[in-house]
Structure formats: C-alpha cells, structure tokens
Length: 243
Image (cartoon, rainbow, N blue to C red; front, top):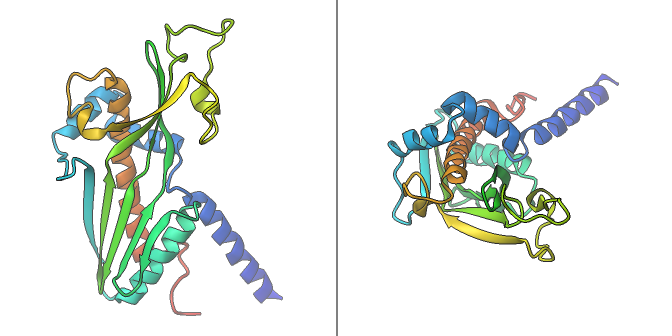
C-alpha cells in the first residue's frame, strides 16, 4: 500500500513541478525578478545593460554559458536536459531539434506579454521567442540563448490620445486571439533589437524597448539558472540511480 502512496506522491510532485516550471517563468514573475535585479527605472536599467552587452554577427542578442558538471556522462546530461526541456515547455513544438548522438537539443518557445505599454498613439504588447541551444559533452554543457526580434502587437486605438469607439478603447492586445485578423485596429510588427533603444538612442518606441531589453536579459538569466539546477540537482531532486 505504501508503495502506491509513494508513487502517487511522486506523480503529484512531477505534475506540480511541470506547472511550476512551465515557460520557466511567467511574465509577471519575470517582471518582479527583473525589478529586484535591475531596478524599476527601465530606461536606466536598459542603458546600463547596453554597456556590457554585445550583439552577435547577426545583430541578435546572444548569451552563452558553459556549465561544468564533473562526473556526469554525455548520456546522463542528455537525459537530464531532455527531461528538463520536455517538462518545462508546454508547447509540443517547442523542441525543434533533439539529437542524442550529436549531443544537441534546441528549444524555441514564446514568452508572451513581457511588455504591455500604452503610448501617446498606440498600445503595444511585446512577445519574445528565444532560441535556446543546449550542447552536451561528458562533464559539461554549453547553453546558448538568442533573441533577434521583439514580436509586437500594436493597437492603434489603445494610446492615450487615440480615438475611441463610443468612449471605449479596444484593449485589443490583451483580448485578441492568435491569428485573429478581424480587428482593423490591431497589427503585427517585428522590431529588430539592434534598431531600437538602447542600441539606437533616438527611438520612438524607447520606453517599450527599454523594458523589453531588460525583461529579455532577465529571462536569459532565469534560463541559465534553471538549466544549471536541472543538470546538477535534477528537476525534482529524485532522479538519481538509487531506486
């Protein structure tokens, strides 16, 4: 009987963990994390980060970290990372490459609404879709995190001075379903990070992009921390061979 209870407890713990880690961190939690680490003044925080950030040859924002895991084989690390990626990202299409022999896992998953900003004319909602590459060798892994664009939903009726429909604004960025093209006030844009603040000083979307950069950077830190925790201590803490 106790075995059944134990198995059920493990199952519930796994379910809880998968929900807890889904998308690594929700946008609201990510914002709290970013404010604690970089402060609440997004323009200043972005400007400070720009001093230490370098865009790669493709003008993308790329972070890379090598994590040493002594005593763990390539196969053990592959299993741990595959487990982490599967449990973390709910989107079934998130894992775009999973090559055991090459020791490479690539994940691409969207984190939505990292920024919602109301400007003078438009209201913006910003998503990012980082590409996370995990390269695996005996005793070490390399994590590469890359973002090239902000995916933006603009609402031309949502700004402070925008015209209203019978006194009501659309607030479309929080209500629109994916691929819904029926609202003429909403349109999609891709903003290249290299062409916006803080990499470009004179930017009409300065405030939106300042927060977007800080949130993108904070998410990279969260990814690195979660990956390191998964390979060193396991996802739920009971994945050792003693069973």
